[in-house]
Length: 239
Image (cartoon, rainbow, N blue to C red; front, side, top):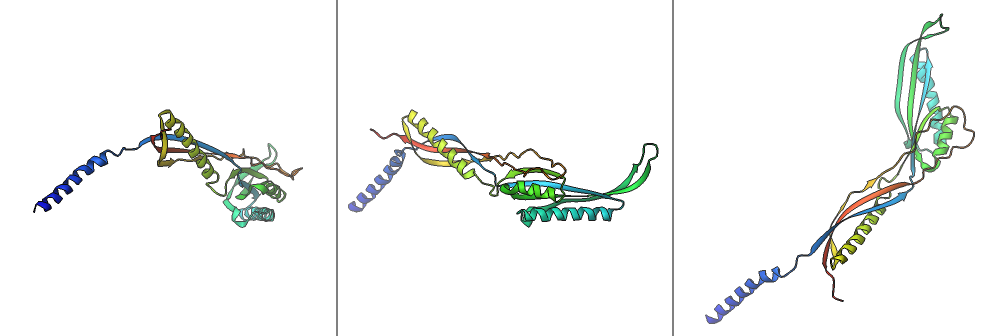
């Protein structure tokens, strides 16, 4: 019986020391840093829109004339390298009304119907100039664009986030050193990328064929990222 009581007392003594041992384990300090990063990326997609309008005394011939012109434009831009998936009809409109025509004091009222169609075209940024020329040669008169974007919506974001995290780590190392500590790990990372694509100003095509090939310059766009990183820090090792 004495031996059994001794074992029980030792076990209780061990348990009584466990919380004290846990209490001696220091909680790591933390340091929250905001990092900024940006990269320049060349857009690889260009979008533009065009419209065709025709008039006639009734709606059917006006619409038929519009259909023929749009078909010619679509064939031309397809030949220039635009896939079928990059051509989309936006609107088809017809309307009829009466208008007055003739000399000032001898005007007469006639019925006139208007038919119009608008089409959006999306192509590789490298061929958009050729696409504009092809559309104009096929009869397009009103062209707006191009606007530039990316085939991969996250283009540049990964690189920008990497730059932002690197910036955050550099700041954390400097701040920890000022405190006599070192960065020991990462507790959490919050990524809030912000990207921007600034479109080119709309361009209205002039009537007639261009005197020289249209050259469009996509340039580069800045993609920005912001991260908030919580680093763990601890005392710097003794030298």
